[in-house]
Image 1 (cartoon, one colour):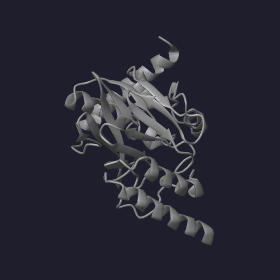
Image 2: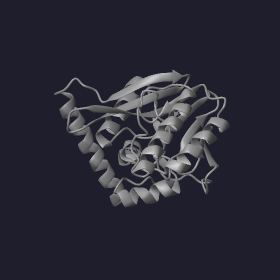
Image 3: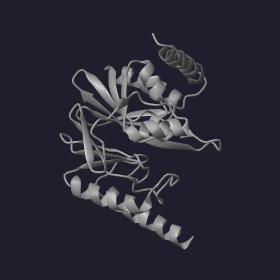
Image 4: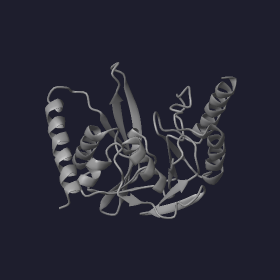
Length: 254
């Protein structure tokens, strides 16, 4: 076993112990798993800010044969330990693969936990580079074929599309053709959102373009999953476009 693997397993064991200890002290769960369609579940984790407010973050769990593919980790290591425990208890299938949709902590934060458990974790090549830059855990595997905006990669029948810079330079979306589910991640905002969200690494001009591209490319989508907030339909794309336009106006005025 490599030294890196030993470190990961030690961190997983520590995180598991912390989960056990804290779980005895609080009834509040930071993980929810909700079915979306046959063989597809929404996983939602909650990050608690110093103020005490809790904010949700969404990912997907997809059955692929006798195992599961995870789209994005939970928000942080401890939440990802809890997510794996909830998956085992509720679904009873192992997670074999995971795909990270960009390099922010709400997507990538639990990567080391997954890899310590033998999960193969994939990401855009730029996501791996940015993870190093941001001090985030680095996924071991690259999604091949994502060479430029408009390119796609497929894993277990799922399409991962790189539309180009938007919320971040490396944001991916996932398309489940059988269920007609579009996972927009943080490139797509929920209907309840009143702003475009975290713009620290955003390209507002191109973000408008990629929302148009998603609406054209995935006209068959019945369900659209945002990175945060309630699942909806294609109205989320139009709403996101309006929020980006508002953010562009503020940026221009400033």
